Image 1 (cartoon, rainbow, N blue to C red):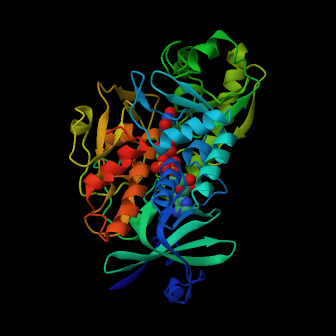
Image 2 (cartoon, helix red, strand yellow; image 1 turned 60 degrees about the vertical axis):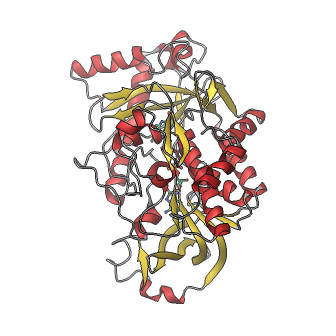
Image 3 (cartoon, rainbow, N blue to C red; image 1 turned 135 degrees about the vertical axis):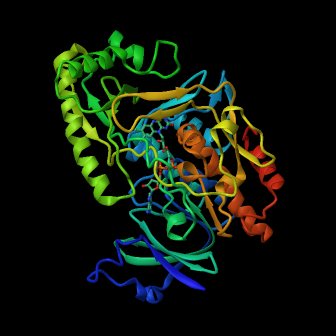
Length: 452
Ligand SMILES: Cc1cc2nc3c(=O)[nH]c(=O)nc-3n(C[C@H](O)[C@H](O)[C@H](O)COP(=O)(O)OP(=O)(O)OC[C@H]3O[C@@H](n4cnc5c(N)ncnc54)[C@H](O)[C@@H]3O)c2cc1C
């Protein structure tokens, strides 16, 4: 049985939009071994991994640059690669960090190896590594649908200035963060029992901040050496103002993150509950958050001399998304397994960031520090139903608590690396993604430097 699956309702509800019943007429403009949808931390690493294994690989990205939340959301730092000074996530992700460092674009904060980075050099470095691996890059290209035949994805549809194009592949990797391809292909997705999602935060860069001041020096780093990264004096002032009746929007932190340039910080302070997969809801939330960016900037200028001459140099291209869709995989990682560092026979990556849940309303946050690095089983990257689909990054199969740690970028890169290698292995061994030999996969990942 063949089906054409497009983003639900956005196409079919509107008669005046091109009817996708005519999608049969859209010719296939590219044939690949592996297509990776989404060029964020999971996606660009997955594409490099697949291509280095000899797979003819394409990477589709809706923006004109790679990096996902790192560059499109100004999410810094990139967390975390190490535990007590020892690498936990190695291989291509760590190679990327060393390459970025050699360009002057990364500062490694030991012992956890949180990575402060320069957003523009991050874009340059990802692009170079992807192109050097001979990945065909389709930027400014949005995934809008797929065709499935007997549950197998046969091709995807993307839109860009050339029109609507379709590409076929043997294996597809969904690294859209929101699980767009899995959702379009009809994979079962998880439902949060209470409908609760972590809030969105719209990050921005402030310039002309006194980054040499004690206030900033104490909180700009995440290695715990100078104090907590959350800027407590600012937090307390905002809470005080709120208590005295001033109109202070919900906020988190705040965090003033190092972007490697004197006078500049990436600010993570705004917060609102939203469903990022609902266009109307997300648009409304983003407009509200943009207002809040300027409100908080004025508050900082008024109450803290370190910020008195600062200005909003730039808002991220989009509000950041912490939580949206996730697949129901062959295995769903639970908090219980995660916190106790359960070792699976098919462990393919790790995670050591705290379980970090931001309240969707208000100013609170719950954190559980891990006592030892956790593991990720390959089966969390694969659905039971679709024989040629892998997912990596934020949309893998976890419960809410495990996601609250695994969503960070180094962990997303780790699952991206595994997904890329698994896709190539599935093709080379002529097995479905569910049937590949995970010992061979693990051996490849270890050879690259993964710490399993
Ligand atoms: C406010 C905030 C603070 C955070 N703090 C930290 C932190 O301190 N440290 C840390 O490491 N992590 C942090 N995170 C988490 C982290 O940034 C993300 O979870 C991580 O980037 C997810 O990686 P990903 O590759 O799965 O998805 P993403 O980074 O979301 O990348 C997905 C990519 O797919 C593309 N895409 C999406 N849909 C389509 C489509 N239909 N067609 C084509 N392309 C598409 C996007 O443009 C994007 O490039 C934070 C997140 C937020 C929002």
